[in-house]
Image (cartoon, rainbow, N blue to C red):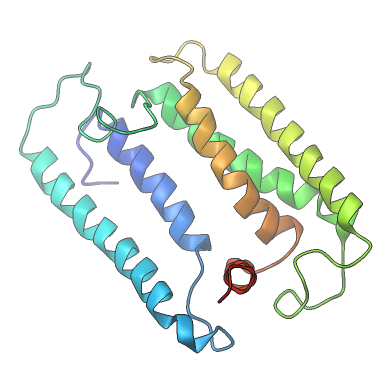
Length: 197
């Protein structure tokens, strides 16, 4: 953060979203399928390459004067167009926080004493409760995003749908980790098994 040049909200946003993913992303655990080691190695390599890329961008950005109205080197060609302005950063960071809190708040609706690693994603007979919990979580996140969008009205930038999209993309991960209390690795292993792995 100390190395970030002024007004590089794009770098702040990229770093925050990436570190949120990396902190919760699947990892090669002792109980993982050893035949799938290369998938975990690939994910770890991508995470590591990101930090090398971020370091290179910081070094380059520190030697360049940035126009306050610049859209940003990353988002100008990204599939999800997000204007890297203070409003976008606030909506994404506070939206992700709201998503994690919402997922934890609805957890008692489907509390289970089963092992988060060995058990299925949803305990038998709890499917409807899990669907209600997920719907409630999405509703809470939507309300939080609407409130954030309103409260950040005085900040520069627009209410980009891409910022909301980033928060929504993380919702299933937060639901799995904080509501279903499953490690992301366990979820990933179950998905790989259903895909024929």
